[in-house]
Every structure is written in structure tokens, then in C-alpha cells.
Length: 108
Image 1: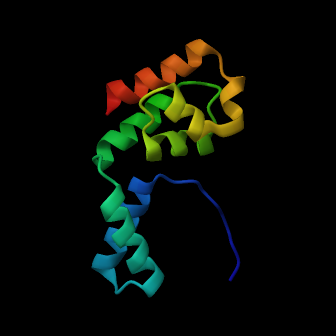
Image 2: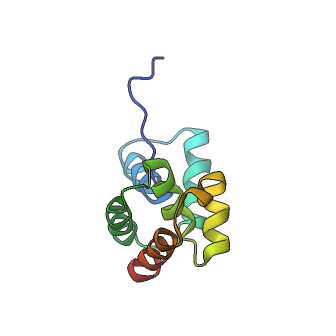
Image 3: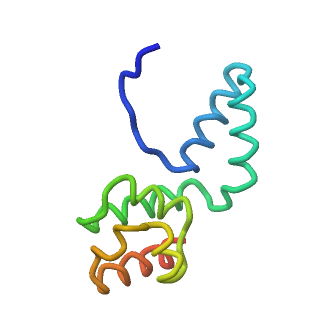
């Protein structure tokens, strides 16, 4: 099997994809397990996550990988955001950090 493309997606997107595939055909063991876990942990509506991702994309310094991590974990304060962004946290200005947190709270 060759990998043709790779894309980082949110947990919400993965859940939607697996739900769709489950309607079309029977899922493999790993897919069933993944869907079960996603159903337990994805608590925000898919549309809200899509809006959040679009809003976060407007913050220029955020990369796709960081946007997806923020959308998956939905940090509520600076400590949560620091845990999500790891090393990159210090490269953001306090204003950018506040903008990220404000965007999450406003959207979700």
C-alpha cells in the first residue's frame, strides 16, 4: 500500500468519516474501536469545530497541526494551551495566546 497524501484532521472529522463509512460498509476491527473512542470523547458538534478551525486559520502563525490540536483539546486557559502547543507556546506573543483562547471560548 502506498500513501498518496497525508492530511491532519480533527477528531470530529475522523468521527464523521468513520460514521459515513460505517453506513456504507462494515468497519474493520481497528476502525470500530476508533469510532467507539471518538464517540466517547468528541463532545462538541461537528459544525462548531469546523467554524473554530476556520477562525483559527485566520491567526497567521498557527500551523495546521497546531490548529487541529487546539480544536481537539479545546484549551480553556493559558496552562491548557501551553500543554497543547508544547515547545511552540513560547514563540507566540501574549496577544496571540489571548486571541487563540478568545477564539476557542467564543466559538465553542
